[in-house]
Length: 326
Image (tube, rainbow, N blue to C red; front, side):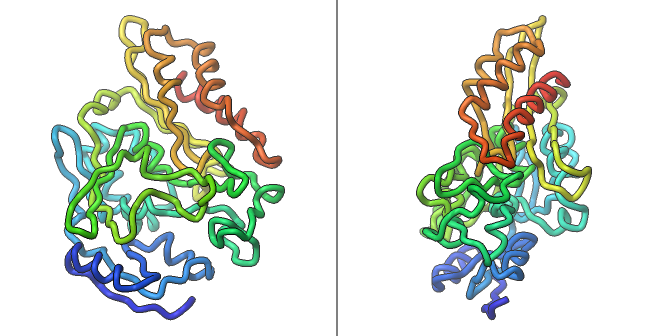
């Protein structure tokens, strides 16, 4: 681990100003992902700005929905009474991720910012375009069992591992961001992360110095409270990242589907939401045949890279299972 300067910020403005003074600084909250990368010699910040004591830990009502503070821990979020009652899919997703100890430290904002767990990204001994642009993608033609099958490019097939973000994508969550000029902006969760394209080293659409302050859940998606599920398929029951995950919500009235949400995790570099597939469900009577057709549509452009070919069929079956459960 390289030497670094450590600063504990007292205000958001001070945190942003301190980060902008350095060329290679990073915000630190729970540190469950960043510190891990630093120990593995994957991340080398020369300064860490601790934002863990900023006033963004509250969870409470927001325009009829719910606002999740960026500094609130994953555990506090999953166990919050309003989350469990109104957005149980999110609570399920968080509780299926990591361990109690990690969830107690990990924050909501940090969860959004976590980077891929691709073996080559996490090992400096191998070329990786995400870690070192232009060096190549070792995963293409290498060990890629857990990696992406949607939204990939010739430069990168890394997958984004967050369970929490997959549920947030299905729930139409919105990320609140403090900007360096003192202003604020909002970004839908589905637009927060980017696909690799020609710049796989850039994971999201945050600008330099910007700070996540909250994640908002709209009142509209409360209606899925009793009609949602989070299905996580993985190699073992605990402490394993998903091979495929599905966050789904389905409203059925008089034998017809009147509203639907569907997001996939661990199949792309971002939570994968297919609104055309959701729209195809509306007005139809629920059936395994319909769900399989929708699954085929969602995965129509998927590409396997050898060891992860199985994820395409697995994702289709997971979609059918999740929707059938609902």
